[in-house]
Structures are given as C-alpha cells and as structure tokens.
Image 1 (cartoon, rainbow, N blue to C red):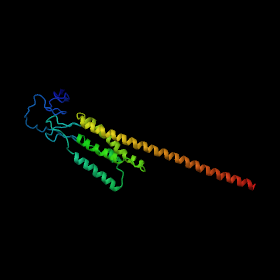
Image 2: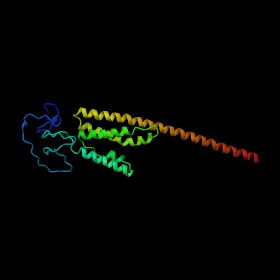
Image 3: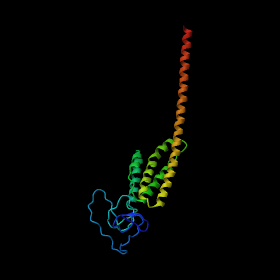
Image 4: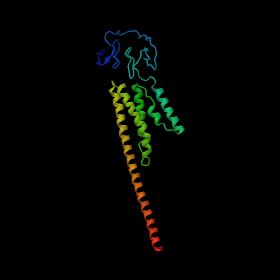
Length: 223
C-alpha cells in the first residue's frame, strides 16, 4: 500500500494521483495522455469518474487514476427533484416527514452542503410562535433527523475538507439548539395541559360531591 508524498494519506497501489489532495505520485508522467477508460463489467450502480471512466469508491471526492475532482455531478438535479416532490406533498396536503428522512442525499460535499443548508433553513423557519409551539416542533423533527444524516455522511465524504466539515458542524449545532428549544416549549405546553386537566377534574368532582350531598339532604327531609 502506497502513501502520498504530499499529505501522507494512504493510496491504492498504482494510483497516479492522491485521492485526498490530488498530488501526482512519483513516477507518473507529468504530461501523460488522458487515462484510457478501463474495461469493466457493470454490476449494480457502479459510479465512475466522468473524466477517465475509472471506478469510484463510495465517498471518493477525487479520482485516483486521473486526479479529476468529483464535485457537482448530479447535485442540482437531485436537489431540484427533492424540492419538486416536497412541493407536490404540500399541494396534495400529505405529510412529507417520511420522504424527507428517507430521501438519499448524494455523497459529494457540494450536495451535502446544499442539503444541509436547506435542512438548516427549514428548521430555522419552523421556530415556534407563541401560539403554535407543538405544530412547529412536529414539523421540525424530520428536518432535524435529516441534518444529522447529512452530518454522518459528511464525516466520511468531507474527512479531508475541514472547511466543509466546519460549516456542516455549525449548522448541526444551531439545529440542535433550536430543536431543543422547541422540545422544551413542547414539554411546558404538555405540563400546562396536565395541570388544566387536573383542575377540571377537581372541579367536576366537587360538583358531583355537591349534587350527591344535596340529594342526601333532600332525602333526609323526606324521611
């Protein structure tokens, strides 16, 4: 197993470029012709480099064969599809909670950042008003789960990009703070409801007791 002379990251044997920093490996021709497309048999959903056709591993952000950076491929279409389906759920008056949590986010850092920004903005938009804390808390839940899914993926896909990770971590932290605030408001609302129920029950029991007492007193006069 080889290691990059520039950043020290582990590389596959025979790789011409570091998959982490993109540095060319010693012995690779500096002006080499474009790498030929490897002969391969496609099995399942195999992702390949759009520049040279070499197979890519999950969460790989730079081709180890030609050094091409894997960035915005499919990001725009994926985000557009996601927002389009969300709008359809809203038009039909259906819940989109399950869809939000299960929709697969692409593994590129651009996609992870774009989806994290969307989830963060949705959570911020659902910060409760004084009279609607429970409803907003319920709407925030799937987006809070989504941004944590994105964070888990980013730990793999953006391991070599501290700047991208810092942005996502900041959004996750803010989302956690807002979500916890809504949870606390929801708990307080439930407590208020519990107290109200206790008071109503006590009043009803008092009324029933007065009625029974009145009946007993009336019967005593009769007999």
